[in-house]
Length: 278
Ligand SMILES: Cc1cc2nc3c(=O)[nH]c(=O)nc-3n(C[C@H](O)[C@H](O)[C@H](O)COP(=O)(O)OP(=O)(O)OC[C@H]3O[C@@H](n4cnc5c(N)ncnc54)[C@H](O)[C@@H]3O)c2cc1C
Image 1 (cartoon, rainbow, N blue to C red):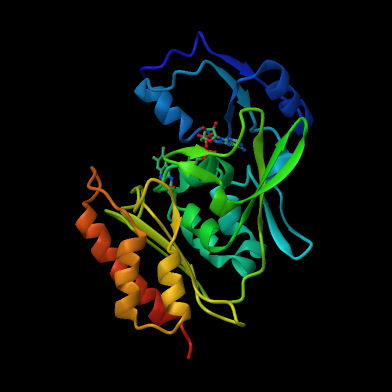
Image 2 (cartoon, rainbow, N blue to C red; image 1 turned 120 degrees about the vertical axis):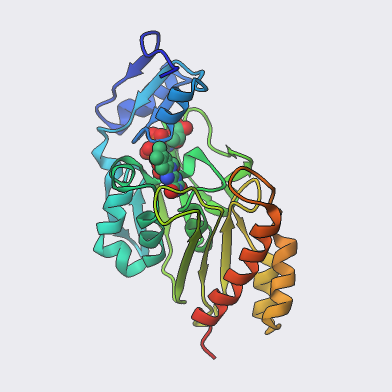
């Protein structure tokens, strides 16, 4: 273990109100949820920050419920809670599918949806689901609440619009009509970071198809040109060419740009075949 614990301090709020007041009055503080990402940085010695805010006891942020016509998932909902939730399985099965492929059971038991999103890795498995679902990120500070469309949340590699006095408190997921689809391609079925990950919603009830990919650009992205071509009835070959322009993969330790481009094209064809009725 590279990171010394002794010179670090921990704030332990008992309620969300306390947590937001601590962020306002004592900040900057690093929020800690399940710590599955933070602990890796601590272990590598790359975690420079020394003051932390423990969110783990804030049960109010674990709820999974219907709010109006949207599915609302608290930021502290773990991957296990999401997999087990009848509401998620009914309304957003592609999210349960993504959570099932995250790490192993121990990571699913501790890792949270809010942590996956705030961590901002372009390989985060839930991110393409939230992008394809047109999710809304609910941010709260001591001064109030604001709602940010998930597709406007990231501003660059691991950069977001969230301020240092804000927490992600929940995600709101509007009702989806089309067939939901999720695929992760990694080295093995568990404990593998994605080489490429894709989520999509097939066309239905007048809504065009929606397609989002991870691990193919500095941030998760919606394949907007591809979506436009499919909505106009173009061939899948043309849509695959558009997808090559939508994404910007790189060579890295997990894969090559060329492999990612080819797999993305194959996944698109599979998605269309599985979800397009008509
Ligand atoms: C062995 C292993 C395997 C893994 N496999 C996968 C995988 O297959 N797929 C995948 O996507 N990820 C994987 N991960 C990464 C990690 O488990 C997930 O990203 C997880 O969802 C992070 O959640 P957490 O609650 O543990 O976040 P934490 O580690 O507690 O926090 C992560 C970041 O988010 C911030 N944060 C957390 N909650 C909030 C909040 N509510 N508001 C504002 N900021 C917040 C923290 O300050 C920190 O910067 C793996 C990690 C490990 C160690």
